[in-house]
Length: 299
Image (cartoon, rainbow, N blue to C red; front, side, top):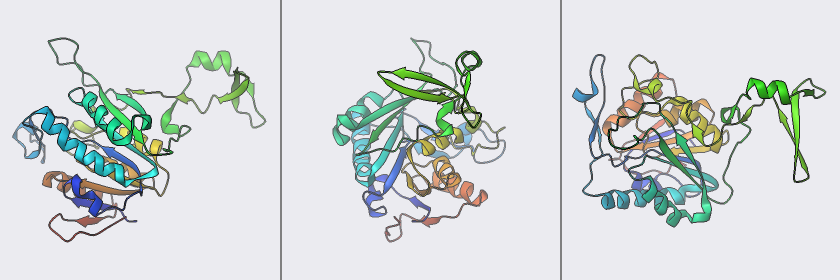
């Protein structure tokens, strides 16, 4: 397998990717916002005057959901038995999308959800403003979850450490033990606790302000910390990570940094240009497949 970037529609990915070989698929599709998104492509330029990155207008919510379901069906066929799909949406369509995923994967294959808090604040004057986005997780037979990875842990509170972690093992590591239903569990202070399902420590600002090194100017760029955590949570070194709506290439950069192989795809010419520039600047090698060229299977 080789790192690959494809300019094309996600509906055609089965022509490029073998069935059953993807360990993690992260989907960040249009959210059905109802506007065109523009990008900042040069210094001093505002997004309002920049090039169109992609069009997120639809004739109806039903039309959007039909478009989305067709692509989720393709991703389902590409996942391995240990594969997980992360579907990233917001309040506009996430509830309808969950019903679609229940239908495609089977409700028993719903693996959980993550509430991501970008930290942008509320802009609503009518009712509670939406200050979070939702990531739905669906797995195949035995989805990977690297629960002990440091990216999924956070330090215990200082009071908890002083009150409960009073014992040391033969290597000097501080720990506590708890017995639940007859089983004894050991927790180490230096390992930290699981972060749970609400992620508020990956602010969108680091990816969306021109003052930060990470930004590419792409309008809906996600922070690298968020994708680094997702990649480390649901895949193993050497595994194949797929992003069918790769946008600015954050998933691909996170995969490469964690010794995974990636396939990125996007139908937007600007997204492809942005991602190519980002990968090349980072010294990440990859193959490029233009949608107008003959199809070739890469993985």
